[in-house]
Amino acid sequence: MATEPAAVLRDVSRAYGERVALVGVSLTLPRGATLAVFGANGAGKTTLLRILATLLRPHAGSAVVLGRTLPREGWAVRGRVGFLGHEPLLYRDLSARENLRFHARLHGVATARIGELLDAVGMARRADEPVRALSRGMAQRVAICRAVLHEPELLLLDEPLANLDPGAASAVAPLIGRASGATRVLISHDVEQGLAEADLVLGLRAGRPELVAPAGEVARDDLRGLYA
Amino acid sequence: MRRAVAAVVRKDLRVELRTGEAVPAMLLFSVSTFVLFHFALDRASVEGELAAGVLWMTLLFAAVLGMSRLFVAEREQGGFDGFLLAPVDRTSLFVAKAAVLFSFLVAVELAAVPAFSILLLGPSPWPVAPELVLVLLLADLGIAVVGTLVGALGIQTRARELIVPILALPLMIPLTIAAARATSPLFLEAGAEALAGRWLLVLGLYDLVFGLVAFAVFDFLLEE
Image 1: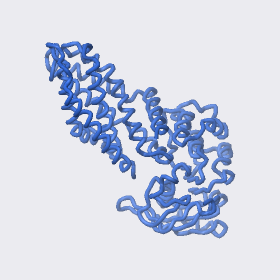
Image 2: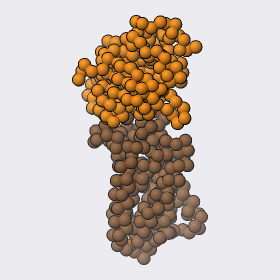
Image 3: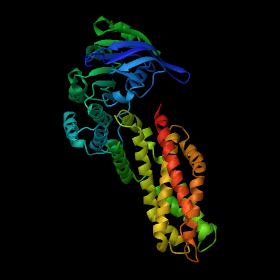
Image 4: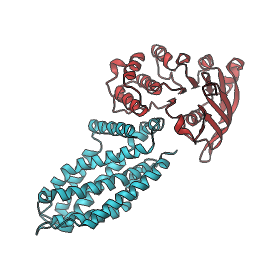
């Protein structure tokens, strides 16, 4: 059902061996809303994103994403989620266009969309060069194309504007910004920018949720305190 | 599944054509080993069981090189995550990688077997080419299946260069025995004998059993 929340987490926890990465995260993310996740390095932000993307299993608690319970129904969520992590998930020896064609085939997307996306992010001219020859910012633009290629309902974005110049950031805004219309989970270290984008805020410290509140009710100093 | 298998195979072959990281190394290894055998055995030519043994040991060790490289890009360049995010059957990655390794082996053998016949083999292999090709293809299928399974397991560890041969070589003992026994009658100086059907059957059963095992467990190997 389109009216049900995009994600409902109840006491979600996750550990890597002995090290606890995430403990007791509970929140409800409505469809079309943006959740901004703040926290210092190692706070569990990426772990949360990977759980929502079905790339990691929660070890405790329940996670329902796009109406499907993870990990049992992860198969029904894949293909409806766009994931942009620290790594661009691009093959360095293939060109931008070849990488996107590969992902388009996996997702069953018409290849015509590849050209549109490359144009949109200003990469059409360099699209046939191997990814290894691109700058980090250019590779990030291609990675954004990859993440939105299949028009996902839920966008999971880990510092999506990292390495992008202001022009490139403006170019990708229609694809991953609020205008995309997708529900978004956005990891950011930029408090001002993250808050400006957010409807809901999650603050993590050492894997524990220290703050879950609507963006309008969050004090900037509380968020900055997460990095202290 | 067909769409995903085709996408991965096409991608891997394109990367291999561009970088030449696996097949040239496997081929160079094979030819170098034949040259070493040539001098180490101190014989102008070999035949029968010895010839079959030399051929299969060389091809198996060359295959291990390919197995170690099979999932490197998926691990180091995020290919696993990219694949796992797609709405495709995870087993299609296994089928695709096995097909890629199979094609690498065929490509290597297209040059390595003629090199073997020039450098070491006494009797000409050409009169028995169809039978030899049949044995090679059946054995390649088994190597590809086991190699893909072991390659996926090895890539999850830090010591993949050690883990892959340690796991693959014992698993391929039955295949080596069957392939060598099936091949040795084809390499007799006195004239090739008929292909032993039971060794072909053993190779076929090996392919089937390991194919089913790999099909059943590959999903779990992709779990974090």
